[in-house]
Length: 615
Image (tube, rainbow, N blue to C red; front, side):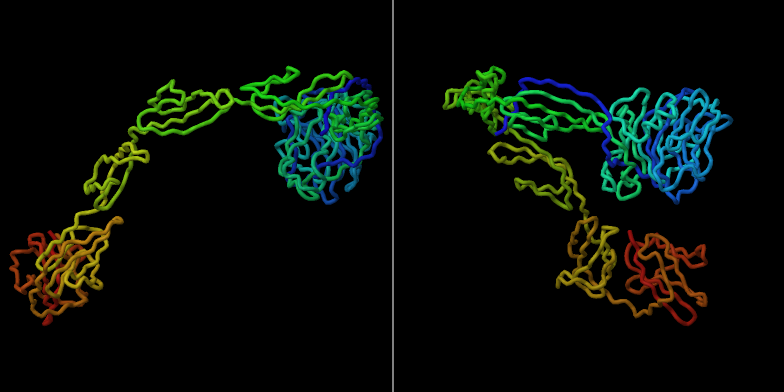
């Protein structure tokens, strides 16, 4: 077991310096299509002096302008487009007269890391490439308004699109005009502490170079983390559109020292090392600017700690020997007292808390007397009661009580024809019904049923030998009651047997099935008739008019209506008329429900059509 104790004597001294340590830092690769970083830093506003700096590496295949930094809005003198031109010149564009400057072509070499800088100094602009001034001009109309697009890296503000194609690293924005000497002297080194006038600083050192970085979508502003940048449209995997290897800068570091003694041993500030013998050690931690802080630790002496063990018990709480801790549950604890040597006396406490807790679930029909006998509960709920356990301490019981004197429930049930309740009651009508059964503990359970009957009343009508089901829009199957056999191909609502016997129909509708009572049919012979398939009668069955449709070449002479015995019914019983299409129509409304035949005389031939008249 390793114990970390307070330092006995600590002497600390430190300083910040630029130790020239060559490190490979990361950068961001922009795909030249839609990658850009949107920060929440508003930029230097108005006509105030400013400086932009960055390391860039333009893709050799890049075409057109490539924005490095921009903010503001797309109006004359109102944006700050710092970019590489299509001819590999460096430029600053704000729009309008005395708002744009640029260098000659090819001042920037494609495929090569180049330091670029822009300075606005009292209305005059300067452009620097690798610390050397390459361009200057009047920028007296530059006046950036507040409240528009915040600083954007790798793309210009709205109004055009010039995405950067290549690598960008070490973006710095200052709120004053940097001199050529300041730019040249500091462009090859990272900063490891806040700098006067540095208002935005993006090192782009996040992520694993060329690795899988899909979760790293934030670029840190080391000056103000509340103004970090959000990566937009980056793939964040592979060698492009991702965190990649950047320009190799000299990285600064801060240094300090600690002189101390310890009891038992010392854990280093980083937590990576534990020192158990005196000596001089070095530890490294990171500082707020992403640089190393190197600490020299002079550990002068290590004094031993003492150890002991204690077995203790208490009813409900125990105060540690130091008085610092109060324990309310059993377990093994560590407490520390000062020893005679000034180091720690570490006590291991094996503690037993004798107070007990238990939870019980109880179901009663009407009420319950508590285990202590002090309470009687008639309502369901959670209660507490206290009795004494075998150790003489409190045993606190949590009782979850269910009162089952009368339990109730409801059920909505849908059935075709009848519903049987749990107690055996049968209901064949829709409505609300109540049933009572015993529940699992022998108490009454009252169930309210909401019954919906979806079935149908099935009856047969015998219309002079044609059976008609009272149920419409169903699925039908006629059966022979004497043999129990299904009658093949008889699946309509009406059925006219050609043999005397007893018949019924099976009807299925809306998921319900019922079989009708058997109906006896006596078939009486009908005079021999000839049916003509070229003549149609519809609708059939009918309650009113029947339309007679005949072929165009037909020469219809006469129409006669016959009953089931083949007898002609006088014309006074019906009205004959022409339909809108020129076909004949017979009004069957005055006929009694039953079976009829319509005989059509055509030349010397005749045809007969069977007709069913519905009620």
